Image (cartoon, rainbow, N blue to C red):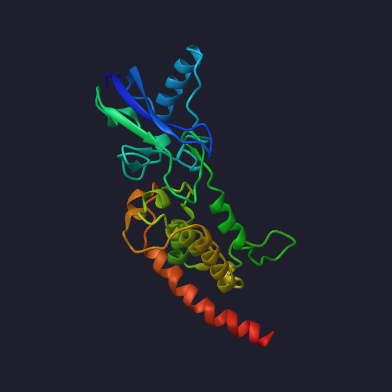
Length: 258
């Protein structure tokens, strides 16, 4: 396959800090390979800016393998860009034509304040995870692998939810800035497993109510599922809502017994 080179116009959001106003700046970048990833293209831009004694564009990245979820960018108005089931780091420049203008922005959500340029603070996700607490697990020697039998459909459902990489695309794509898909995936991962049953209803109540402190309400637009690079189904939101309703009864009974 021939390695085509592209010339592109980039319109990138620049913002010096969380308490300053931002603006779009235009950049021309030429001779970018089809085989370059989107982040590699930004690396090339930053190398050129640094060589010109200009400040590079700040953006989040880590694994660059679609695993860590830090490469969070809005590209032409789409979370992670135009390719489905793909994080920004897995998006390649072959998806664009030479001469295209590409608009690059950070996640736009009040719960994700901008730190600088394209980097946002997603610590609100950490607060949700922290509120979920722990699961009860026996300590001591390593248990046998088949000590707790888990049916394959249950294991598959847990693994489907565990695919969530916490990137925040669901929040960025949602017109309400809701985090229901993220929260539901994290809850469902444990709630369907036998190991997660002891704290099941305390966990769901705490995580949902922490989520509500930071994020908007879900109104079933479905944009979250479409934007998710792991294509997590919005079915998990229905399961979370069901468990949350049960938790309000079960946890109240627990308190009355105590």
